Length: 156
Image 1 (cartoon, one colour):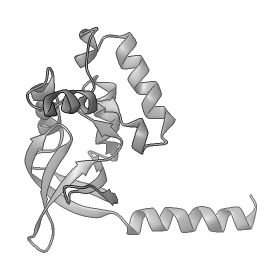
Image 2 (cartoon, rainbow, N blue to C red; image 1 turned 60 degrees about the vertical axis):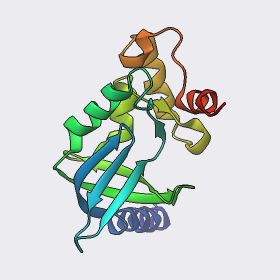
Image 3 (tube, rainbow, N blue to C red; image 1 turned 45 degrees about the horizontal axis):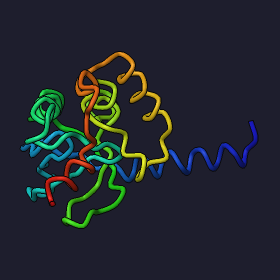
């Protein structure tokens, strides 16, 4: 293996590990938003990266919230901050139970859309396509409306 490549790989991996933060999930706002307690006892709201779940008033919104709750509520998670949104929430990739990626798990279960506008992870698009073909979760509804379109309709 090329030593330059190995150096870059080690640098990338160490950056990823060092940029992770541990926190305990103490609240679930909806399928793609959780509240965590940091080691300094401060709370932080995290918006999941790369996925958009149905809103609470939307079909399957409660299912997505329950799925997220079942996976991470009361547990210690690792997260990597990727950005912040217009509401001041931290956008983050959340990992739980031996590095499962929560956004990916929601998409695989058919409880969230791949947020392709803000993601270049094509695997998530493949997982969404499979969930749709198998009619998992929200894909049982042939007329499922994405949360971003649903929010536009609600604002009118």
